Length: 317
Ligand SMILES: Nc1nc2c(ncn2[C@@H]2O[C@H](COP(=O)(O)OP(=O)(O)OP(=O)(O)O)[C@@H](O)[C@H]2O)c(=O)[nH]1
Image (cartoon, rainbow, N blue to C red; front, side, top):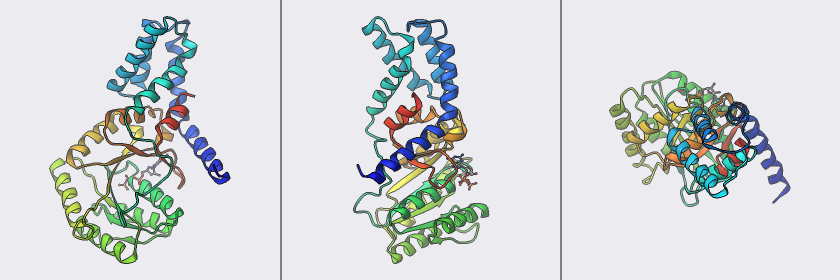
């Protein structure tokens, strides 16, 4: 491992540890109550643990799987001390998540052979969509890639303005039209401009109004169809951005969006400001779609590639 990589990994770990602080404090407080006065993991402790996991936003289905695994260990080991519970949780949750072949990445990367690589970003207003696009663009630019943004969230002027702010900050071109114009037309222009400029990555921001699923579906389908007139197999990635601080609501949004369009990856933001970080464990267990990125702060460097082992290590440390 190079010196640079070592430094980077340390920074990444520190940011992750700090970002998950609220979730961890809340989790460990609940855990110490759950095992108070007990030295052995018994049925009472397991009941309490179940409640801790559910109230930490891990989600009921995933919680039940974790409890089942711990029950199996209790049955096998006969005596399991409560002082070992964190370590066991860490092992069992890592084991559970490793059954899905996703969330193993350690670097921001664009697959070989798709140039331009087109990422269509979806998600409701306020979840951190624009910020995630900006941070992602910054990471790709840092790798020397040519990035172009497309402001196809034309529903609100603020969305276009905010994306412009990020384009300026990262110093990359943006393709936009007036508020209210056809999102598909903006996406078309952005792809055409990106292709002409020899872009490696084109990131398209889209509006996500959930109040009408049929409209949302139609709009996203149209944007995709029009993009394909320029780049036949676009979009290569449909990234759904979810606000981690909304806990179970993020689950609901994931369900609704995946029903409206084919989502290929997830970003879970705002994990730093919340005690609901456990939601990432449930989401990565329950959706067949990989969590690719997590937002652990407002700074430009605070979007991380999600790695389930690093995450679980940080969470249960
Ligand atoms: N603490 C924290 N704040 C974040 C993170 N990601 C985004 N935010 C903040 O969340 C707020 C909303 O982010 P935007 O990127 O504007 O959200 P959006 O989904 O694009 O919303 P609109 O532009 O309003 O449609 C901003 O204040 C961001 O700074 C994160 O990982 N951590």
